[in-house]
Length: 335
Image 1 (tube, rainbow, N blue to C red):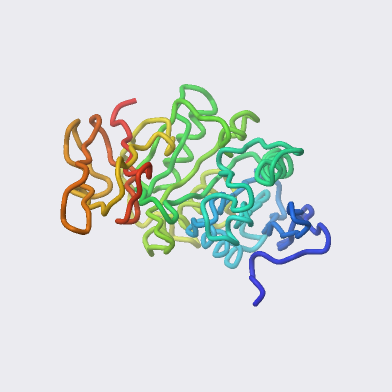
Image 2: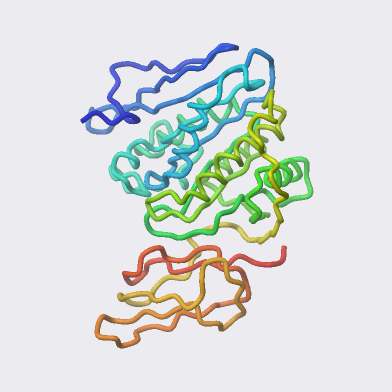
């Protein structure tokens, strides 16, 4: 059965979209074993000049909300709806998408730690190099759509650069326009990310998170779809924003802070079954019970408590846990 998103290609067929065009194309990606996959690229170019918005999804192959958002946008938008150019990559890591995994199965690397890449590196590093040099360098704004995927449950939010600079102000304004209600401000951006690559190029950026779980909640689907349209309106790209009815009600804004690094999550000290004591999105104080890990005999193996005051922005997404597996991450309530 042919995968409608990932197809083998005999040659590179990706190219620029001319004003007034809407095209679906692909970029040939050679594999280490000689097999090649295609990187699908969906583009629209309005008849009038405007900014170039680059949208990535599927940096992690098990995060499906952003992929659906891109496919919906491509189906519903026409060139006359926009000013400028919209470039969308629905499965930025086609190797991980094919495997349904967070990382690239072929080399075990996380694409979200590999930017700006290396043309002579591993498969993932070469992919990051292509994404940086072929796509990011063309963009005026980057939107990178993420979610909890298989292993995490994450609060639905928009992450932005929290800094008193032109880049920071543009990132914050875009995050407010996106409209998730919960914003995560980062003063420091770890290397290896698409957003750190954008930052190095002076490109303002925004990323999203959502619950995950290898299924798409209707509320997250709507938040991502309307949020992207709100962002396009904010950037001056929508020619008829009233068509989309984007302002049904005001969106309250809560801001949390931190570096956004899931690699710094609290990990399990044992194997077992995790039973949460508080829901995702809770505000906790240091020492509060987050949950417990028990055995199937009912014996408690580990109390999981908050290491600081904060906002519970991520929790493990599956009850069965193993030693060393991330359990939760707190964001700060203050800058």
